[in-house]
Image (cartoon, rainbow, N blue to C red; front, side):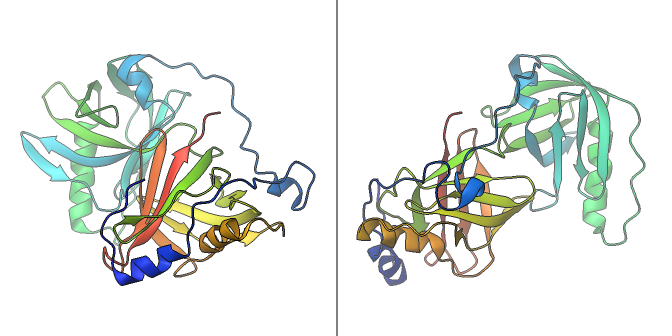
Length: 296
């Protein structure tokens, strides 16, 4: 665990957090009913896709960062408004920043070919001119045969056409993001990490906005909405009334409280970690969560 410099407000919040152990979620059939069991969704049958970089695309959602045309970089609209997701039914769906799209695809380990015509973009007076201009360039480049290459790591990819123009994308949600147990090892207040939280504290996010999990002692339910690069969360509600050690209950009390209800965070993911941070009151008073995906 690393602790950085913290302001007075951060210190006051963290003083209530003690290192905690033990007291996990209730067994099946105890208080809270089925929702309180906190069981992740059943693993779906193994889906087959190409290997290599083409396989990395499959099943995940990617945000568009920029398009490069004739050596000129054009930034995507903010807050991941432009995105794409590749499915196992040989289609890609997404949004160009102004309008949704869906195309047929053929993927190999290093190349992507798009089929069919672009669906006609709906004229939207509410879409800013800058976003419409970006959407036009994206549709021009994201077409026909494209090669797939890593840009920096397996979280960032370039989709390049035969003219050398390319679309830069970054992982937004990995395959299996929903229905997975996301453990909460620690909280963040200002520039400080809290003491480690109990290993039994976890969240399970579902695509319909439902959240279930355990706070270290008691099961809970809540609501969370992912939109672009933001995560809006509502305060958890206990589904059981167990009592654990005072230290654990203090940590649970902190997980139950939020500065606002709901509160909006900016989130970032890798394949097995996620951070969610609220910068709205400045870095010193900012707060958030760190998550680690549990296997299976």
